[in-house]
Image (tube, rainbow, N blue to C red; front, side, top):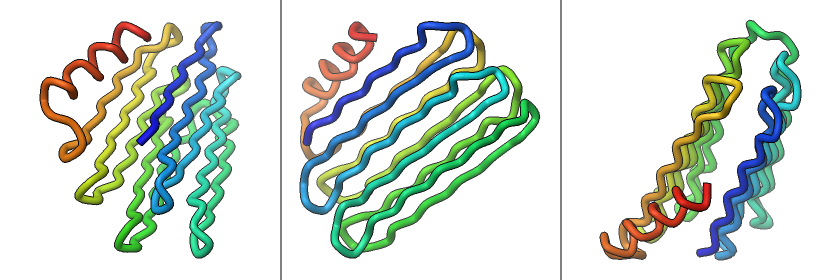
Length: 146
């Protein structure tokens, strides 16, 4: 498992990039969020690169009062992915949840950006891959990198 998370918010109008790379054959996902304007423009791209499952989603919410929910379920036994996106306010509140509930790979990511100065919560759960001490070190390193 290789996971890369990049958050770049150089301006009050919130610009965010997230990249997830889980290079096992049964799980490959790329997520990109670009909200470069106060009126909330959101682009989401999902690539599940099995030969039988390649999905791309693009959404543009160009109005400050537009609330959008997206749920994606790829229910193969080795790939179940759910994504929920909610941008209900002009101040850019964004929640993203990714769940890959294989017994050997469970990852949850939550981003909450309710204000122009960008507040982020990230949760990683890889129950059978790392012990609690390693898990704690991963979370601490992510917090300090942010």
